[in-house]
Image 1 (cartoon, rainbow, N blue to C red):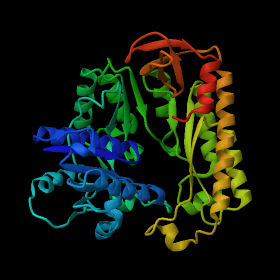
Image 2: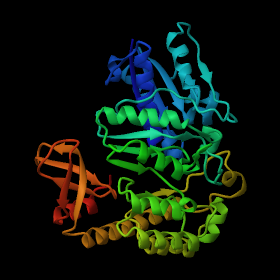
Image 3: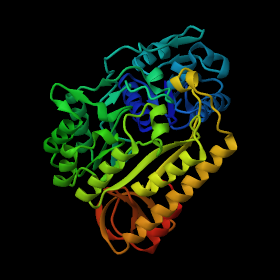
Image 4: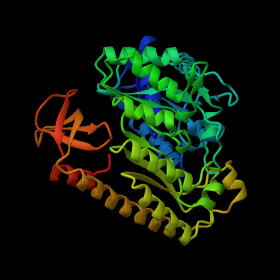
Length: 427
């Protein structure tokens, strides 16, 4: 039987779809690239914002139109959010939550008609191992999931309610998967999770895991963190970044706001002073580090002055990339219960525009400062029109090479074309 799988949203959702493909293959199913060829359609949904939820529902409806004869299954965060209501909003046959995804086999083998809903136990601390990946979409970079769930409950965030409590993946499963990926040509591993920095087991926390991976796999070219919190950037992590260049010198540090009052309302456990002090120390100790972040604009009660504080904060931190989101009220979160969504949509849009304008200026200035510098890039894509390879430096800058092959690591010098590309293109 043919199965088509797709996803929206984060690296975790991407990883889960790849794991499900392997799990289904191991159970006799054939994975197809076109929904029209499928007997079953599976969508791993995203619920991080109202826009993401709407897009998830739209894709479900669109897939059913493309392949009306297929059985349609929704998975993931939107299922946990909407529960039974999802059947009224999309023409699906079954819905499975964010854990116990192997239940999909029961759905695929069930010949009876009728809607089926399978939700997760939000209090479970048991990580579900779906499959150990041995490749990743024919790429030379692979995501490896280290955990699921979150215990932080930031006031704006729906994710702890739909993903459940934090649960770490078994370290031996992480290392087994990495070993298989390296054996099959993967050059870079990206550790990802809903709250990656919260990883902890009897052997230690995140830095312990990083050291373990780097020492266990000397052939691994690069190890990258997908996201980190400012409170996790301590002397031990900085020391590891300095000692082993395979740990990539790019950190995506979630900040969400550059105003202390807004940060308190968000239930973020730091202030801008601490954040910028840690960033300054990081840059002093690791001079070639490149930083990116997430910012929410238009959080309830955010004034023009508070937004201007965020602009200054972003400039002071000198982020290379800023992922900007207008505040999206999520029913069930503390912010939706305690605060009025009182910043008009037009103001949110203007703040997004202002922040992205600043980001582009910062990025261009950083690129100009790197002109004629030499970097190693991992060749990942090839543009046949320009006969050019593209790849990322270990500090997450996209550069080009005219020579090589996919999977090579090439030394290149930053030129005007690279500056222009990084200024114009979001990747």
